[in-house]
Image (cartoon, rainbow, N blue to C red; front, side, top):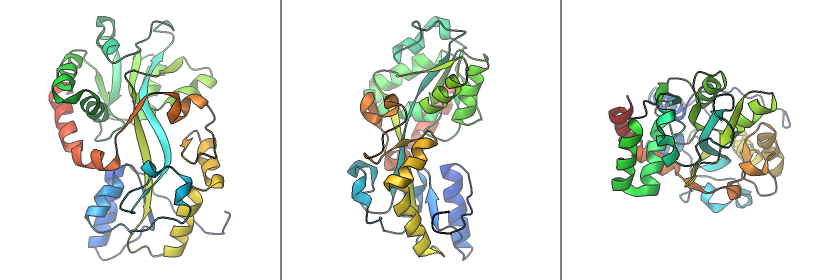
Length: 283
C-alpha cells in the first residue's frame, strides 16, 4: 500500500513453502520473490535457492535474529508455551513447570499439535533435549508419554481453541498471544510462563535467488524490520524484534521470561530426530 506494489501471498507451513519453491525451481521457473517460515530458510539455502543478501537496516535488529551467513533475517519473535482452561483448572493451581505436567490429575487432559513443526509436540521434544540433554531429557519424555497427551492435526491456534472449548484442560506448544487475545474477549483461557523456560521461535524471511521482482522484494524486506513495519507486526499481536517497538504486552517480550532459542538451523537439522522420538513415544 505504501509503495503501490501488489502482493500475492501464499500461506502454508515452512515445509510446504520450501517444497513448493524447490519444485517450481526444478520446473524452470521461480514464482516467489520472498519466502517466510522458521525452517524454510535453511532448506532453501541447501538447495541454492536463497539469495545471500540482507537489507541495509539489518543492524536495527539483534544479531542473533539474522543469519550469520547473510541469507535470512528474523521478522518477529514468538514464544511457545502452555495455556489452560480457567473453568477446568483453578487459577493458582495450574502447572508451572515441566515436572508439573506429570501430575496424575492431568493424564488424558492435555493436547498439542502432531505436525512436523516446532509449534507442535516435536518442538517440545527438541526443547527438552536442548535444555536437559539426551539422558535426562529422554527420561523425562518417557514419563511424559504416560500422560496420554492427545495429538491434533490442527495449528497451534486450533490447539488452544480446543482447550478454551473445554475439550482439554491444558494446551501445549501454543503462542501466548493467542491465549491473551482470546482472554480479552472473555474466553476461559490463560497462558503459562512454564519453567525452566519457554521455547523461542524466530519467524524468518529472505529473498529467493532468482526473484522475478528483485528490487520490490528487497524493499519489502527492508520495510518488515523498519520501525514502521514492526508496528504492523506488533499490532497484529506478534512480538517485534526491533528494539524501538515495544510489544503490546510487556510479558510477551523475550526479556520478560526465561527462554531457549531453537535456531532455524537446529530445527531444520534436528527435526527428523525430534519427530522420530515424538512418534515413538506419543503416537
